[in-house]
Structure formats: C-alpha cells, structure tokens
Length: 418
Image (cartoon, rainbow, N blue to C red; front, top):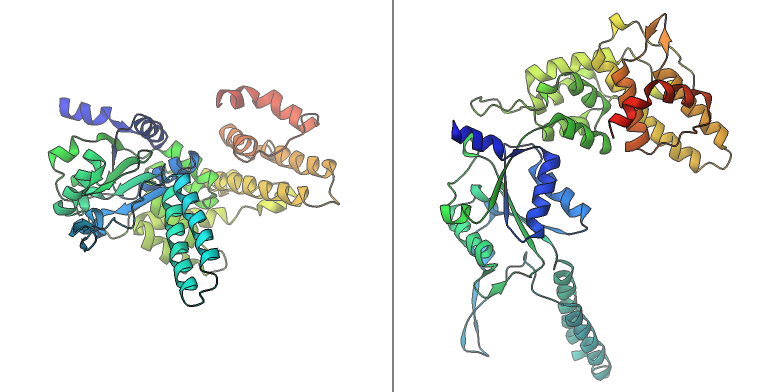
C-alpha cells in the first residue's frame, strides 16, 4: 500500500510538471519525467524552453551510440597524445569575448592576406566556419539539455550519459555551467522498449510521474487551435482523451498526441469515409466510431461565421444535437471571432461600432433561445466567454447593452474561474 501511495504522491498534472521542472532547473538538479507514450512529456520541455527563452538540445538517446556522447578519440600530433573530439550536438564553453576575438582575428587576417589570392579565401572561409561554430555554441550556453527516451537507450549509452549527468562532463568535455539537464522516458509497465536504469543513474535524478489531465489539455488545445470538433467531443467524453492499454495489441490508441494528429488530418473537403479511415488509424476503431458520430451531429449546426455576421440566429432543437456538438460550435465561434478581430483591425473601412456589432451578436447568440430552449448550457456560455476574453483577448465594449446584460448574469462565474 505504501508503494502505491508514494507513486500517487509524485504523480503530477502537466501544469504542475512545468512548475516542478523549472524549480529543479533553478537549483541545478537533474529531473526525470516518467509517463506513458503520447501524453506530452516532450512538449512540456518545449513549453519551458519557450517561456524562459532557452534553446532545447533534444538528444534521442535511443538512436545514439556511446561515442555520440563521449566523442571519438583521435591522435593529436602537436601533443603526441590521444585526444577526444567533442560531440557535435553538445556546445563548448564559449563567451561573448571568445566570439569577438575570433571575429577580430578574421578581420585582421582578411586585411593581412588581402594580396594573396590563393591563401586568402581558404583562410577566411576556415575562420568564418570557426566563428559560426563559436556563435552556435554561445547561443546554447543556457540551453536545456533534454535526454529523451533515456531508459530506452542501451545500458552502454546510459553509462556514457551517466558521466555527463553526474559530473557534467564526459572525457575531456565539460558541459557549460548554464545548461540544465532534464530526462524523460516511458515506464516499464507501458510495454515500450526500455532497459532498466542503473540505480546510480536513477539516484541522480529527481523523479516525477506525469499523468493526463483534461483541464490542462483543454487549455493547451484551445491556445494551439486544435480542431473544435476534437475539443467538443472530448469535453463530453473525457475518458477518450487517453485510453492506452499496454496489454492491448491495438496499433492505434487515443493519447493527447494522437488527438493532435487527428486535428491535423481532418479535412472537411474530403469524403467523410476517408476522414473516418484516418481517425481510426490514429485513435483506434471504437473511439473513431463515436467521434465520427459526433461529427455528423456537429454538421447539423450552422457555420460559426454565419452566426457572428447575423445571418443565423437560431439553433436546431436540443433533441437533435448533443452537448458535444454544441461545445464544438462554441469553440469554433471563438476561433472565428479571433480571426474577425484581426481582420477588422487591419481594415481601415471598419469602425469600433462595426466591431461592437460583432461582439454583441456573439453575446446575444450564446445567451439566446430558440423556441424557448437555451442555445447553450450556462457552463458552455461561461466557457465561451472565458476563451474569448482571456485566451484570445477579444475586445468587448463594456458600454454596450449586450455586454451589460451578460456581465450582470454571468460575472460571478467568470471571476471565479480566474
């Protein structure tokens, strides 16, 4: 029982994974992120790099040999001894002054050798390559070194990585002081290709197990414009966000990563049978069947731009459309609203009153009724407002009658989601 409790204690959702990994980096502790395939471990590292404006050096250890980390030995005739060539993926320790000195040397060489047509081009090209290498290394002095699939690598490669992680050096190579080390891998229970991690290497890391969390995924999906059909479907059937079963022999299964693939593949101009084939090949047959049924129901709803331009003011009866389709419509309306805001800002013929009309139409519709039936449940109205106001920074005129009506009815719920 204690073992289970310990496992649950270090299981964290993606937003918390960002926080604890950043803390580990701040104090210089290597961290290891564990989890099943497709849940976004690599994306978490990319998010941290983007937030902190730090480059990410992504080393896929599964594809590497020990010499890719340690380097290759060569004979140095000047010293008369064996030296180690630095791995090309890892940066050397380079300062701004190192780059400046190399540039000054090249300028001096260009002037001094200017009259030697045979030597000058070769010398200058060589010095230019050296400067480019120095600049590349300098840009990586504060990088995040991401050792992905570390436990999928053979133990000989893990051993080479161990030296780098433990001592921040391997052979004669030293890792720059500003570089942080993070690793990721699948668990042995995931039936992925894994090798047991040596205890000495495991003990060097702070370990975290990442779990799937729908709220975190939904926030990411909206910001990254995942297809509204996908978001709406999973909003109602959250258990389909991740259904990986290591005991199953199915080639396709649902994960946050595979749903992102579905979003990319869907094409309204294609025959729906072909869309269904692609979805099934991405998330599996059972899930694909239910998703395509959701798509058929969503097809009964009007085009979101027709709603926002006032061409459509009503929805089909609730008995004909389920809630997942309406969630999809709400997200799609927010997507189009953001696009229209950009168009209006870049159109000199449009005025603020023109834009007020669009936002009024949006609010009127999401709060509206058709034959006595609410267009959307209250939670959907709140979701739409939060996405528009906070995710996409849609500008609403608080002086308009519609905004006042909306604020009076829903402001308590909007504030509570802050």
